[in-house]
Length: 263
Length: 265
View 1: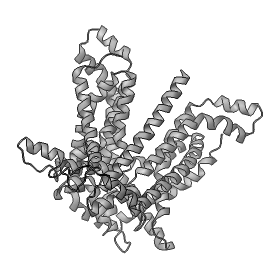
View 2: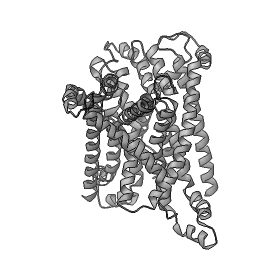
View 3: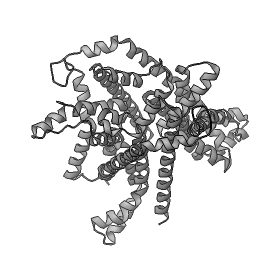
View 4: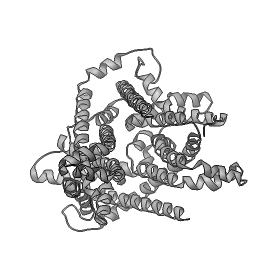
């Protein structure tokens, strides 16, 4: 029980299948087709800057929408009975157990011409294409990742000591001030982990934009998938850039979280 | 805490639930539609019979289950052993190993997938093999094991170390003491790690997509291929069945947990 030896198989496994594959990405990113060192791959990647920015923008909007939708729900949930909380948690998790391609395909069925929502919109006298634009992509992302925002915020809100809320009420705080000075600050760690858990997969996902978006709505994940069939080196350069951006985002979120705790 | 919810709260919950379940409801509804478009043409079960008669779907289902079983068992053994070893390490080694182990969790899935592909193609060119069952299995074990460690580690930390020492004092050798005291203590973590690995493996699309080679199909890949070819309500029938199976398993697990909780209190 005192030995480090049981971890040796996994340490070897990590070396072979976590560290070396990442080194391969870096290697291919900095070499050309014949294996010579180059940074031309990154210059070529600049061609996709617009896609990068659009992906991050879609991820940002989706994350904010998730937050706006999830926060009140988590709050209401945390104030309900234990039994109610268990049922709601299960209801929120259940759709996540369905394969994500099927969940996106379901939205294609709803939004397509003569789909249920399309018919409803037409009935209201509007005739706008619902499928094939950035809005549909954002809708799909929010649908896909909303539970990842609700669950961490709910988990943090559950831990808030009720006596803190009662104390602030006794000291004369009205409902709004109880929320602003007690509930909200204590829920920030949940917001931070929810934001990370939604933003990271949204920014890097592929397929969602292919199904729900139009030709101009390709996201960086789709570009990586596409370009790897032609050019491993440029593909690796873009992957490396994506990885670094995501890592910086996570570090920034963690730092922000630590500062909040100190304050 | 046990107070009645206000009417706006209830309405809000209902709206979110409609948002979450309307797409699934529509998928299920169209699986019974006697027509290929979104227009309702009467009730049928023909898509279900087509589903069971489809060789590619059944083969990929079999592959998915085999991969999920193997990947979850191997990851659980590998991850549990690793947790014990990492638990005995001291900082900074311990935090370095933990951070490297978390890389597949933090890293965007597509980058993990692409990095595996680069490795497997490179090694495959040297040793003349192609990606397929083996590479998918390796990839799945690699992204499942960190979740096992994540589940087992807290149980090791919570464990009362004196139980283990007591077992040694009472005459167990180290191996016996480990299996009689440590394993039962961390078992809940091991089980949840196993279940998590199994479901992640079952559901994975992105990493399998990059490591499967040309021929090997899993169910998520088959769904993707089917949607690329033509839209057929067979997919809806498949979704419905998967959803019903999931609900059944979840209900069984939850009822059992609730019963266990009742008998404890």
